[in-house]
Length: 241
Image (cartoon, rainbow, N blue to C red):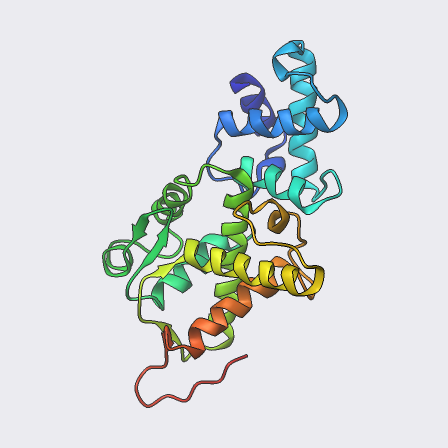
């Protein structure tokens, strides 16, 4: 696998756009997911070296081209396992951190505001690696990708409301679980489904749309705003967009 990764990085570097760190174990996990979709019960370890190479290329190409097994869960599992993030993702995290004096928390890992902003710059590779270190605490590829989506949603809200700041630690796991709870409330109200701890049904939602994950994440972020977890600097008027 290391030889395959090295070869394709040198010959087709565009396939690895948005991937700052490569975790071989998670790539193998993504390949096994893809293999299960067409050959359920077969292990990747049963494949010949040439078949492993073809499967790896197929998985990388699908992620790079925005393809998957036609469902959001497969897409999140694939992109999460490959550590792929959207363009300007790290810049957006920097912008959030600038507006969050208490810092950002993911999976118990706290990224402090003052120490980070005073020692680094937005476009510095070390900052991107620090963000990846924070995300590496997540053990589920689909949840990692949902976390990336959550950062993008919060960044969009703050960019549209430049007068706002989060004055507490921004616990991103709490935000996601509150969004999941909102989804479950809708499921119970509309379809009579009981609440459960398994987030698989949430992972299966599309990102965008009336009942997509982004809408639930945005709702929770705005609810925090209205409850006072996000505050305007003194003397400013809030405009929520």
